[in-house]
Image (cartoon, rainbow, N blue to C red; front, side, top):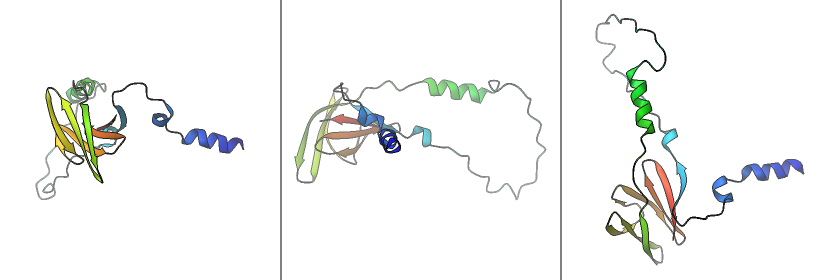
Amino acid sequence: MKRDASQQQAEKHPVFDTPEKEAEGSLVYDVRPAIQYKPLPDLFGGSLPKKAVAAEPKGGPDMSPTAKSVKTTESVQPQWTLPTVGGSIHQGKDHLVLLQWQGQSAACAAGESWQGWYIAYINRQAVGLMRDGKLWEIRL
């Protein structure tokens, strides 16, 4: 019995457990931590003669300029706000949403991009907007 109760508590997701208090959108998920950039292999490296590689100077982890530049770029957050929903149109399976942002407005369907925002989904309850690897859900 205790095990079943603990599993039910563990299965609850924090996004669905908290009541919505703000009218603004809420972050559903963020895919930035999952993105991994790997360097491409050198396709012609085996055919070229080998070069002598000089040993790199040893220092602390903060000594390299690339580590410093990575830290500064991660700390900079984009300065934008979520668009506001002016209304929605639902007819059968077709859904449109009227978005307003920075003095401009447009009627958008799911799968379209507008002003840097990607409209991920539209249903009768909410619209999902994606930007910079984050999905924001705005209740209608």
